[in-house]
Length: 336
Ligand code: CP
Image (cartoon, rainbow, N blue to C red; front, side, top):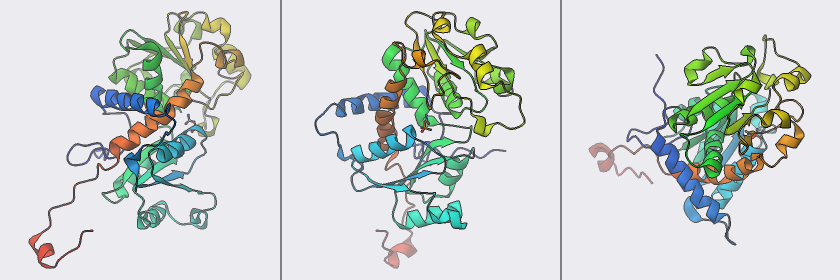
């Protein structure tokens, strides 16, 4: 039997941000509305707000990242937090120090929030179960399980360009099986009521029982793209592949790559998304990635506001301290 998610504290408040699974439409909408306000802050001369003043945020990236790590760093700074970018390559984890001992060190330095990226699915959940009750954990991508802030910035970008989710046909192309971005995006699209979600790619790159995710699988990209409003390309996550047969990069581009010719099969106002990093000439043609329908750099921009929204939403939502017992009171326990 699986344990309940530690995402909510005992009052039902969102303390950690680990997965979009189980978050309701009101919560997702509230995060997008908060992000909308932060995009306006970004237009001001002074872009900082004091919401996290006096708090310390630690970026713990056990796996490489450009967009997520830098957006969280900038988000923490815009919210006036102190930021630690823990350099794990030069940290004592290379001398065998365990993950939990590393966390204890950072907790002893009074860190209030951990942003975690890790190659193992479930790593952020594990950390959330082991931190002090006053600490918040945000999942910056764990294995192939979840990338919830990417999912939220993708939803925010879709809403920005398309408005309502209900009429939309969303097509996700490529390596769904190894993609935490696809899992988080599909969960959010279903919660927000997207009209139709299609996934397309070879069966070897689909999760088992892919239809149970609430999507329809297509093997033919030309068929899948018909009437699409939103098209999302995904990178082939070769670093997570073992023991499965996948097409070569050249074969993949020829069979599934998003070219201008294929894009013309979708609606004329369809938007093209990609979480990055992109491999041009593999899952997407350069002239599509850079073309007028591409919103790939909007996704990057929106990642900042969405991360500010997530961090400010959960910060301070600690597990409530237990009532002081009469014995504690008589001993004059100082809870600080
Ligand atoms: N989309 C995304 O997670 O990109 P990075 O790996 O560069 O953070």
